[in-house]
Length: 112
Image (cartoon, rainbow, N blue to C red):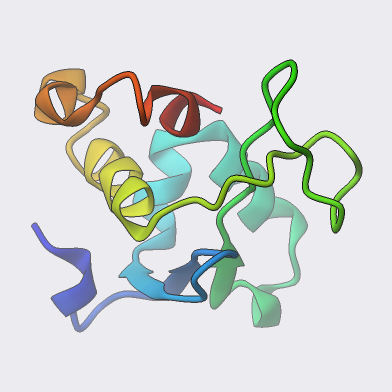
């Protein structure tokens, strides 16, 4: 399923680095992620139509994003990573769906 082509989407997932958006369903994201569930439960309904993807937590020794609280990585999150996370959630958190797409260069961004 490609959520970006769905007529029934009710939210856009925004990449904070590229400002690109992926149309998604709040119910699917919330059922597949405690983080998204908290965001939708704690955010006013009128603000839920756009949700920014969280910036990855910086690994020890990694450059820090000066615009954050000093804990988040300065390395940009690619649209490819955002799409991979959405794909994982939309496929009922089946790791096998994205397993071949994970490598040493992107594993820390996917799991942070």
